[in-house]
Length: 440
Image (cartoon, rainbow, N blue to C red; front, side, top):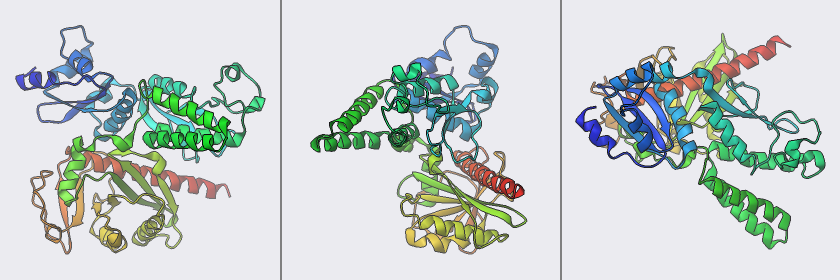
């Protein structure tokens, strides 16, 4: 251990969080989570018996950074997103991909149930995740079941032991209705997706309002859920994406500098178009909040006005998206394409003051593809601090410019992740439409 790292480790907080081990050139080689950062990170450097792979990892560690979060489950969620963004080599070597897990709830079912899966499908169900550590996720959701009772398998109307224990909503014994059960399931989904603080405030408001109206049963239900979640907050909760400290995220800070934004981009939307020879043309919109994928915000579009013209399809998708004022407008849009695509979209978003950039990669959507950004010329932007994102000087282009980013930079990792996700989501929808048409 070098002296600088030794000094750094002495400042580790007694708090949950995510840590990043780096090698001598600053590359992130391992991402991990901890209930107590001070204890977990120091374990790597203690003279205790370790397996061969962990010993090899420790020999490569030259530096360590960390992000403090509120709870253990915040750390679980953030760890998952950071692993997907950076794909550290030692996470791949030390982890079993089979531990990745999603929570699945299909609200289209008459009586939905909660389950877990490793492979989300485009079946209109809600998927929350991914999470690393299947047992930790299942444990957390079981704890939440005492506050928001749910079924764990397709409903058959039969009373079970879970009914007596209060772990099901009790539709089978007339305790509640399917409609009220779905209402409570939506609260569970919001909680799992990170809408925690807002949900707590709404439950408190509901409790007071129903009590003032004399609806004491509804007031008691809201009270029990409110008190249960407050107590749970002290133990184990899922990610609160809205309140993560994004000032510590280097990719978002560098994007702020590069694009002369007043703040780091909190909500980023990525777009992609997919079709096969002009057939089943679709568009995808993926959303990242504070650098983490917000799957509940994803949207897909079946293109109506164009079949094989990608520019017209992209303009249609962006136009339709902007009409949805109930969807929060983004702080940044990332397009799959270069100067042509950015120029096609800029007139649509100017009145909303939404920055737009393109990723020009000649059709290569892989994580290893180089990242070349296209964005408005620096001379067209207000004066701003010099960006530290890249040392190269971009060439001029009419109104727009290119900037080639180092393949391992923080911005490159984040943009590649967003682009890959937008491409995956578009392909999944296109494939679904293709299968449906083949069955006609």
